[in-house]
Length: 209
Image 1 (cartoon, rainbow, N blue to C red):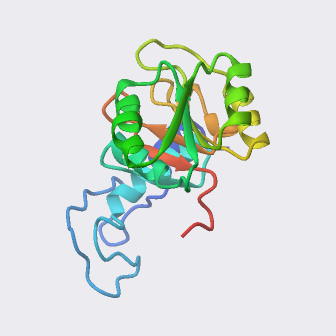
Image 2 (image 1 turned 30 degrees about the horizontal axis):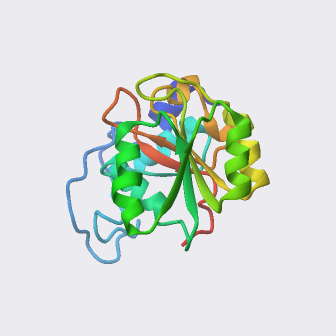
């Protein structure tokens, strides 16, 4: 089984067949020629350098798929887009300020419902899940900046029982200290503005279009 160091430097990328370079180059092209072997056409839909990053972070988390975004708000916007009519997002009372502002001041005015509760109290969480049409639980552990902890395994179990997706912001812990996907998380999120890694890692993405 590969360790973290091996996964960090030997995931997805192999030495270039033309010049033997062992370090992935930075691909700055915005467009690609038609008919290339990898199927690239426009950098927004696929970029060789970004794919190495996505695959590497996914591997560190023990996942098969990863997606890199330009910002945390872009990740949140994508998660919110998964919600159907009248479905709601549940997040913690000590969530990161940017998360709170996006959900409350951007997503909510567009018709997205939300609930806030203390994730350290599982009874409160379950009460919300029983009474509301929750589709996504968005949690941080440790939280930013209070460093409050929540039980990923317990919340993952509740999420599965109620047919809810569990999203875990694992920025502070990193996959070196904590791998939420192994404890029931459906999506794991990292922020590149902090000291750790970037991307959204999906357990349930296979087969999605």
